[in-house]
Length: 145
Image (cartoon, rainbow, N blue to C red; front, side, top):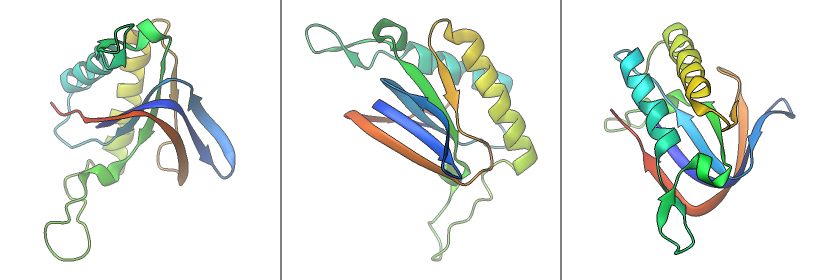
């Protein structure tokens, strides 16, 4: 998964806004066949507990809940694109669509269950989405387990 700290983020499908957040994280979520409930739970907890927002001394000491932030989760199977050979990426490392949808739904469910007052918004799995964001920093992290 890729986590981007944002001032705002929005996702549209066919011109309609389907998910948005103000300050917080845009999470591009890709899934592999080997992902499990344990790895999804770890990822949800990690995202909610990461201290990457500045405190009064401008040090990264605050988490989402501390700053009143939210999370926008967008499915992104192309994170598993392998372009090491040839000129066209291979997506063999990505979970097949049915499995990926189940993993995505489970991940969003876990994130929402654990989020407390942190709002969780989503894109639309499998749709052609337009994602708009305003970086905060920028701070971009790759999260893997």
